[in-house]
Image 1 (cartoon, rainbow, N blue to C red):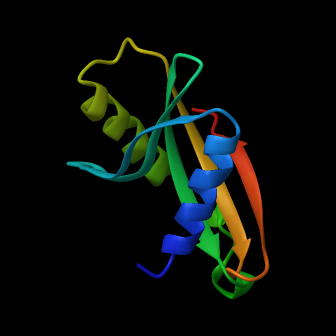
Image 2 (cartoon, rainbow, N blue to C red):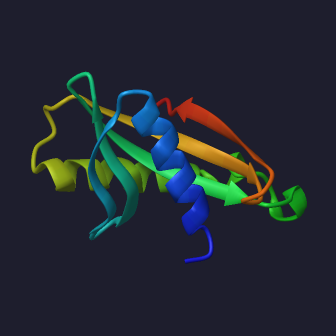
Amino acid sequence: MKGGWAEDRALAYLLERGYRLLGRNRRTPFGEVDLFMEKDGVYVLVEVKQRSTPAFGTPLEALTPKKVERLLKSARHLLKRDDLPVRLEAVLVHGTPKAHRLEHLVLEV
């Protein structure tokens, strides 16, 4: 898993901020959820995107509206209901394992 280090770093970042891990790399019929977490009673699906250089676009550009819609469908599938509080977030990792920075976003849906 080429981007495994970025997902590990994103997970550590979120755990340091009080998130609780419920699942990692959870597969659904709509795609894979990188990190399935909970924070303050809200279920949080986190997409981790990493780019070492902007040559193929930024991590944010990889979060297409279609990807966000698949995340919403995955949330409903994982929770088996759609009346629970859910938030979609992204951790964007810019750089390499030796030199990187994180950007944490709440996705508006």
